[in-house]
Amino acid sequence: MNDQRRDFIKIPLAALFASVMALGALPATAQQPVTLLNVSYDPTRELYVDFNQAFAKYWKAKTGQDVTIKQSHGGSGKQARSIIDGLDADVATLALAGDTDALVKNGGWLAADWQKKLPHNASPYASTIVFAVRQGNPKGIKDWDDLVRPGVSVITPNPKTSGGARWNYLAAWEFAKRKYGGDAKAKEFVAKLYGNVPILDTGARGSTITFAQRAQGDVLIAWENEAYLLEKEFGSKFDIVVPPLSILAEPAVAVVDKNVDKKGTRAVAEEYLKYLYSEEGQDIVGRNFYRPAVSAKAQAKYAKQFGKLTLFTIDQAFGGWAAADKAHFADGASFDQIYTRK
Image 1 (cartoon, rainbow, N blue to C red):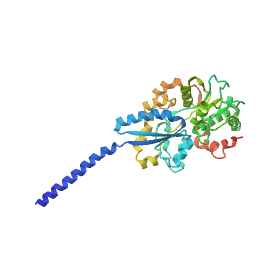
Image 2 (cartoon, helix red, strand yellow):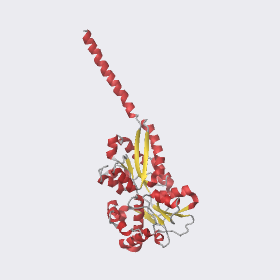
Image 3 (cartoon, rainbow, N blue to C red):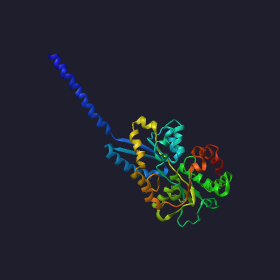
Image 4 (cartoon, one colour):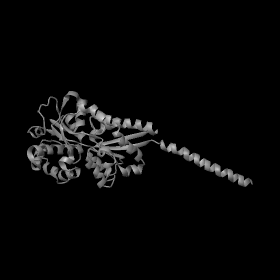
């Protein structure tokens, strides 16, 4: 009798203790801080400093969990290579879809249909390519053909390592193709342009530093947001020139599937990118001189800060990034053919 009672008491107490421990463990686990790594391209530093603070506040209010987002920046092509080589990125917010596609082709770091997993083809913001010049525009730069004049020194990064540089290159190519007729004339034009480039930095921010702080060059071919940040920081030292024609640059964002599944960070990483499409996220995009992609409210609010110009897309002019990469940036393609150092 006594033995039976002891067993009766022992079993429920043990089960109860296990249940209490399990219930107590769930909230504790859920509240553990989480860290994400956002691997991005050069000129998004300020954007993501601003955005990361807003997202951390939002996530804390929603879940009670603290989240820290670390940032890594560099030339977009170099950043893609770093992820392929093992950099533990949770999200990749690179300068162009072609660099993100490289993560699919080289190691299967994310699914091939990654652009279908977020709105607007996974591009929550856009930009374009403009010129920054010295105060008063002493060389009279107005359009792309001014960049090939003798005596005009042009600063632009290396298309082999920089996503921004590829947008620059293709914008110049399409301008020349339309104005002078055909790819052969465009190739001649771009060769002349790079003949006026004294140095190729690995990324867009490096070129901005070369132009603004090292006082090299007469004109900087720049991301629109980078040009406005330059004007904001240095005031009257620089002017912005908006050419009549340029390319619609649509940087894309993606969760790095292999890494988030290994680290257990998928839920917060996915929410992090989705928040770029929220009204607050889109406002932060506009505040940092990117063009909001989906919010009509943010588009209206920030429309006046952007110059008026005709924009063409990578698909319209070059048949998409895969075709553009093969024709222009692969080993032995057009850039390698036209660019020589004396």
